[in-house]
Image 1 (tube, rainbow, N blue to C red):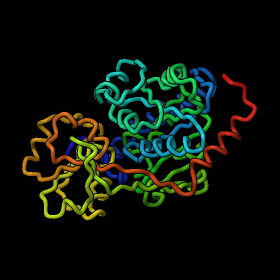
Image 2 (cartoon, one colour; image 1 turned 180 degrees about the vertical axis):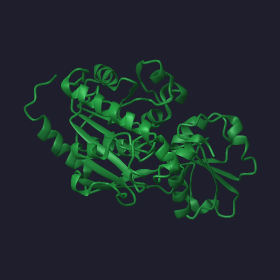
Image 3 (cartoon, rainbow, N blue to C red; image 1 turned 90 degrees about the vertical axis):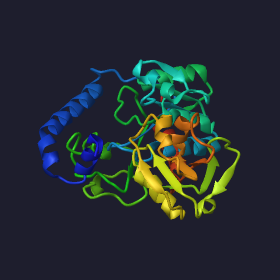
Length: 346
């Protein structure tokens, strides 16, 4: 078991490892609180863009569904007449590590811009820019695309340098684990932070134990849906789950919560040998060669953007889309109008 797997397992309870890490967790809590106070007092500068900013983030580490929700919001807001743009850190990409900002093109290398930004850019919904400094990325996006009238920030809840008009927190059925901050638990910030956010989106399941019900913002329920598989080699070729019946199927997932993908396949009736990888895993041909007995190799869309150059012809990508109830996009529009009414452009 890897160190990451050991920590994730420990975060489900307050066991020995979590107690041993608690002193470090308390130090982390103090640093997080101090940083937020410094931004609130103006000691550290926050940058306000001349367009409304909606941040989609989470309180816990791991894949809760921020990127699918960001894409859904971009799509639904566009239907309502907005021209959104997306900014993202581009985790794992060279651009982020180098402290640069740039637009993501559909033919970019994920090692350059990050896998999630490339996935979002290939959906073709709106401009996508990446950079460790999301405020600078937002400025650059607006300079290149002045028609954009709203900025969506994918995974920026703790990036206080970018001032925001609305915060949306995404959680899933795993809840808050043992309720402690990193590294003793899965939390990036304390649960009291939830009371200061605008909306809570639950991606499947129910609110986990320990979530303060009295401090919750308005709640929306989200689920990921999808049953069509696209050929990674030729995306115009599509098949359904039933087409894999009787085949030797292997499934891989290098996302924040791989089991969600494997459970989705099982719900579709696909029987597969499952292979979890770390989030943002950099695949190589040697990874794929381990499945040489597969008659069908299934992966997530996020994995697909990194594997197109060396996967066999029988590789298939499951595209998932998002459903949210009630209408979060309409609620966002109303809140943005309320919060920005009468405010002078920055």
